[in-house]
Every structure is written in structure tokens, then in C-alpha cells.
Image (cartoon, rainbow, N blue to C red; front, side):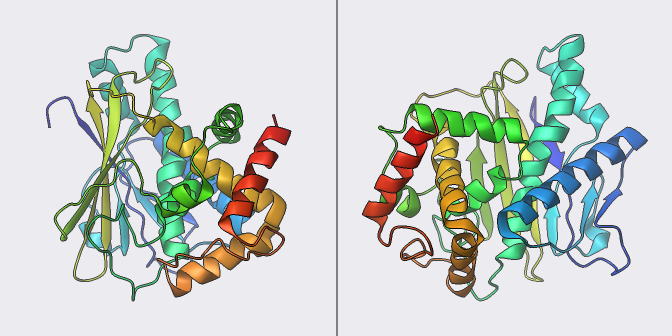
Length: 304
């Protein structure tokens, strides 16, 4: 793997009914347990804020082999010591190392847990992924925007501020809704692979990207591996604007349309994850995408 570092989190749906909402396995310190639980609880609270819904319990496994858990959903995340090791390899020194470690626990982990929650909450087992899709049959914009919602408020505010700055030049709602994640590839059908960049990370990981590999098993389990990839050849092609685009659209729908509009989307996507009309005729919102686009931009301009 060279300078790459594998981040692992294992999230399981099938846990005993009396289990804690967020159970941590494989930790090497109480600090890691605390960070992992706080990240999970924060993501759960934000999911309830978005959907007014709760999720199934999840189990977070820090490193190690979680195959014996028979988990239905599997992610991978490293221990604090392993995160420190990556920071040192990346050239960070002194307080930068601990700042990097805390950032991963508090900012990145809730986002990745958010993906699990969203997949879990909107799961439609009848829908099979087809070549070229980002991770699941769900619209890329909605899946990513919902995961962003699990991030800390200051990060979400930054994304929203960027969208407000560039409100005039953002892609149309139709392009966002019908478009694909910038890191979508056409992988082997047995292994879903896509990449998502982390930064730049304001000094903590300026030359790194995140590569996410998703594997689906015949027994229904889904494994998600997240890797740091150092010395990534950055390209300036607008990818950094994708997150502000999709998050600001969901924030507008939630703010103006309310839970009724958000959960109308949920119902439609549960029934058909590829519903091309999932944003049309939403409660309390303009009925077609062109009018929705104008209203979204007006909302962004007003919020500046």
C-alpha cells in the first residue's frame, strides 16, 4: 500500500436488541472508544434532524478483522495511533499531528457513518446497482448531500457559504440531480470502486485524497474501505464545488419545504431509487425543476 493508509469502520445492522446504539470493537484505548461513539452519536442526531427518523444500531470496529460479526453493513476505520502514524508519514509535526487525528474523528468519521445510515434508511434490496453508478442506486447528489448533513455544523456552513458565493455559476438543479458524483467510475460489477477527495485540508493533509472501495457479498453484506492516498496529483476541474452544490440544494429543500418535502423524496426513492422525477411536485416547493432552480438560487442569494 506504500504511503497509503487504510481507514476502517465496521458498521453492523444485525446487533442484539439490547445493544448500545453505538458499540465500539477493537479499540486500543478508551480515547478511541470515546471518539468513535461521539462521532456515531453526532451522526445519529444529525440524521434525526434531517429525516426525523432513527437508524438501526451500528457497531464500529477499529482495525482488526470484523468478519466474525456477520455484519450486514461493514466499513473500516483506524485507531488513533494509526492515524497519528499517517500524520507523521505525511510530514506533520508537533500539534499538527493531534489536530489531524481529532479532525478525522470529529469531521470525517461522521460523514462516512452518514453514508451507512443513509444506505440503511433508504435501502431497497430489489434495486441492483448497475455499471457507472457511484455507490448505490440512489441519486448521487442526494446520497452525498445527506452524508454531508452528518458533518459538524461549521463544515456544513463552509459548504453553504461557498454555494452562496458562487450562486450564479452553480450548475442547474436538473444537471445536479441527473448528474453523477465527480469520482464515479465504471468498475468491475463485483466490486464497486469510487474516489472522493478530502481537501485541501487546510494544512492537515494538503497532498492527500480519499479512495473508497465498496464490495458487495452474496450474503448481502456491504464492505466499505476508506484509504488515504498521499501525494495525489491534484487537478483543478471544479470537483471541489460538488459538495457545496448538493448540500446547498438539500439545505434549501429542508429549510423551505420542510420534513414533508424531504420525506416525500425518501418515499419516492425507497420505491424507486432511480426515480427521475423525485424532486418534482414536492410539498411547499416549486413544482418543476426550472422553477425549483430559480427558487434555490434566490434562497442562496438571500442568505448571503
